Amino acid sequence: MTKSEKEEETCYLRKPRKKKRRARETTPSNCKSDNIESGEYKFTQCVQDNYLYQHVTKPTRWRGSDTPHVLDLIFTNEENMVSDIEYLTPLGKRDHYGIQFQYNCYTKLKIDNRTKICYDRGNYADFNKEILETNWEVLLNQGDHIDKNWEKFHEKLLEMEKRYIPVKKIKTSTKRKSEKSIATKDPSIRLEYNKVRNQVKTMTNKLKREHEKKLSTNAKKNPKAIWKYIKSKSKTRSGIGELLTDQNDETSRKTDDDKEKAEILATFSTVSSQKNQKEKYLPYQ
Image 1 (cartoon, rainbow, N blue to C red):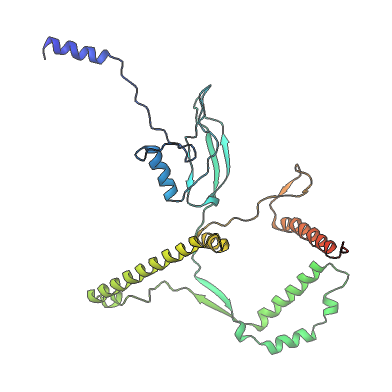
Image 2: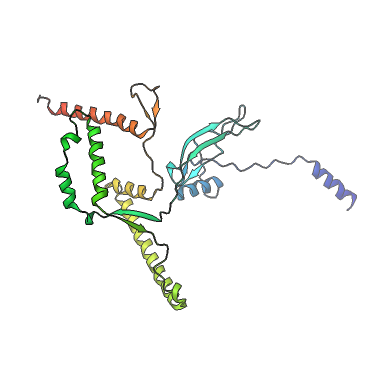
């Protein structure tokens, strides 16, 4: 290497280099790029095409007077998979906030033995005879609450059901009843099976697309049908959350007990029914 080449190389190394900007992911709501070749557009389009839910709604990174940004994202394919999101303080000198959330997962449990009540083989002659011979006035006291009498009647009914109606155990079989090729090891049978299987799968996918297209076309006329279909495809189920014990006081205790929640909701139904009865018998004006 000559002297002039060494000097040029030294000058090049001493020149201040431009810092490369790191790619920054943005949420779909903040993405405003119209360029279809940009990373933001492709990222947003991918999220929309896969029908993903983004659960982080607050900024998770800022420092001093910098503009807050949402850099940490949580994506799921169902809305109810993530709940109770909490934004925690950063660790040490980091400027990223921690995220704590509850993941509502689902599992499929294999039940080897199940029981089935055979109502068609019940001894209903003795069942009816015992019902007639039971002294219901003694069993169900008029002075007791209706819920207590219902529990007594229900226990009596279940006890009679165990004695007069037989139960059958159902065993789940893990063996495949189709595919003769497993037993015969004949490649021609396997080839024929694969051909029929592919035809059935193609027809099933075609009918599924036609059904979904019909639901989307009639979405405005029959919205219940499309929401019923969407709910049938979701694997998580959303129940009733915590309720306030005193609906008139927002600072009252919250309960997650099923019995207490049923009693709270029952008060609303009672008030609504009484209001409807009063409006029903108002004089005509």
